[in-house]
Image 1 (tube, helix red, strand yellow):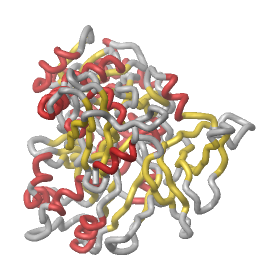
Image 2 (cartoon, helix red, strand yellow):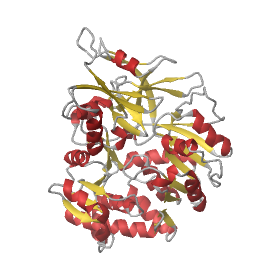
Image 3 (cartoon, helix red, strand yellow):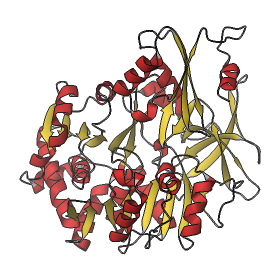
Image 4 (cartoon, one colour):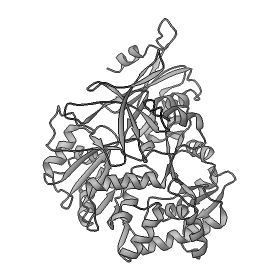
Length: 506
């Protein structure tokens, strides 16, 4: 097993040379070009930054972006992929947490980077890709990287109203992908169809699995997910064999009748994750692709994408409850129950619901520049007082069924999965309270209809609130149901009566 991801870059360049590793609708990059481009990026970054510094990458979803990520890693630093199309306020929050040494940007997003980068040095990706390579400098920087050095920082929603940067090491990513590929078995004959934005945790599979296996990745145009005919044509034109998609990515083509005229002809396996999938739409895929293997994944960013899997054996019915399965290699799953009065933890009895906890080398390093938040959820295993052993509290509930499989029971706190994204309802409320005319508010989620609610008091209009959210928050965090109230319902102890608000959602 490799110790750092750049070992894969060099090995795959030597093994596969001019074969394509990434393609989009306009360009391709070969394995040897990826090695050369990443070396050029690494040289410039090493000349302009110290080791283990965060480097923001604010570029388009294109074949050259992974070369920027990997060049940052080869320079002994870690990359923070950032979606330049989110509102400026959100970008400013992310930049205030990351405080990157450098921002790598493409021509399309230069103006945005200049608006939010503060005093950071900005460099164009187009210039970096052609920068002269210094092999000795790269070798020195790569030698400074250990398997536990940080590789990337992915931002997720934070309950304090500020996004959290989840910092992940080389070893964690390598262990996860090794466990994943032991199950799905990719090789150099495979083609992955990339659906996820490259700043999203799901994209790490599409970027790094080819380096392990010799497969290649095709970046499917975003607009095609609303045009199933075009989507399936792309999958067929590129002979795509493997999809590692969010559940939303699978549901949309099925909702739009994607299989009425054509179907993907070369698929062998479909891996899905992000939220609980609708049985109705999963069944459409299964019935139209009976020879394809379907795999349900579960796991948080803090455990490097996914930690458990379940290989479907049968076509689902309306009342099927899919397990989230068993842990991948390198992971262990625990179910724990906390006694709030005693302040103690115990192993959850068999068959009962407990909090899902993860341990193993795939855990993230923690939250960047946030020791307090890190210590809340990355903690010493309370069942082990003999030696240090770190676990991650997922905040999700689950139970082990009679079949030995793990089943999911939702969030313990108020974090939700909406449109494939993790969202803290508290963050939505924190932002709403900054809007003039909102005096009190509560955000709730209707999971069945995938609707975000915002109940509020104050003179602000629905239009004013919606426009403010759209200007300053990601689209997936904009409430779709706004409910103005004369006053918020409260319990005798002063707390908001959540049960009354939930009744209003029916």
